[in-house]
Image 1 (cartoon, helix red, strand yellow):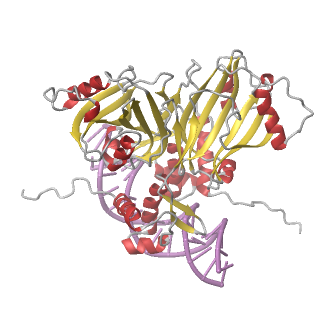
Image 2 (tube, chains in turn red, yellow, green, orange):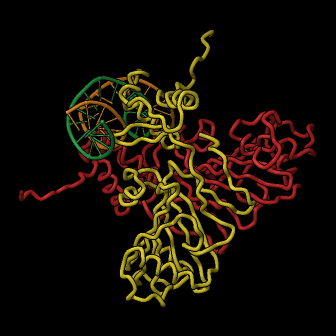
Length: 255
Length: 255
DNA sequence: AAGTGGTCTAGACCACTAG
DNA sequence: TAGTGGTCTAGACCACTTT
């Protein structure tokens, strides 16, 4: 009868916790400051550690916190805006944007990459590709790891003698690629979790949330290269300067 | 001595589980098929339910699974490619891309939006904005929810009499916006978690991982509008047709 | 060695969906 | 009403970093 519905949908504890912590971060903490450890926080809020962790995980996902095993939980700085798309399309390595070639090798591409290379061109699964590995640095921090797949047929002029591996080899492949006439490119962004090797490069644990940026480079002959870049989702905001001019400098808008 | 290092880094159980499940999904399950429930799966693999859930969560994050409370866990279809950027910049509502206006109201913008509107123009926090809400549908499924902030000053011609709220009002704001000359636009993508209202529209639980797409629309007078779109990260792959022509049709490349 | 976050367990109860 | 996934607990141990 007169029983008014106080809580139609009882908010989960971790959700409420997240809100409380979020406000506390805004008001009482500075960037880089370390939070009390999880056991103490859990006790302070009167919840189990697992519940507290659920809240921390979401805040980390949103780029508000940074947690490191053996160290502690710190308040994260605002996300870095990293330019991904430019008005002009260009081959990887042309712009001075912090990419550092690491290595290159020649092998058969994984099935998923074959699909990407095959569309619109004549590429078969048994054709070898050069796989170039690059790391993108921003402010001394690795923000992305990339695997660039270049079919050997795309760079016939590449001397086999020159630097069989290592950064020099990677640079050689990029140089040859830049000789071609780029007709256009294609890009997609999706959520993923870091593979073990990428996670290591990015100083994260395997499975950490990442933004997968897949780019296809087209020439008249078809798809000349495919890039799969793995960006740290916790620290990065990908920016696409479709034109305009002014770079986005804002902080995140929503939770 | 002769003790060979068998497991330098003992793989976490949930990580191994994820791999096993992932392979099983590829081989033994069809899209849409329902998996055994969590309690049975956990028993079958000899782990606690929480551990099993950790694996399922990652697979859902990667778009491989779909879980619905009270229903079960099903194998997800490949992610939908949703076009976000086009070669030409255009006002929202100009292209026929599945956006459905829901509502519009006039109020003071949140602080984060003020920052976005303020940069490069003369916008103060006490100026009212029209807030247009739109939902993006793909194959009968809501994939994104958007809040479009249009300073009242940007659309002075908008009749106050016409439809005070609802879809008609939203359309009126969009119509007025399209009268302006668009000078350029700016876009950024980052990871976030769904607010309660967006989660409801997207048929997800609050806190679900989403891709936040922030767009600024520029005219000669400054920033004429700001859009914050929340895309379901589990089902969407954002595509940017920087040019090229061919739409990306591939499936996800990495985990 | 001490302290941190990461993994894991074995339970319990709740919210939701569908028959 | 039965069955599902979602939340929560109170422990335990492990991997890692720092001192």
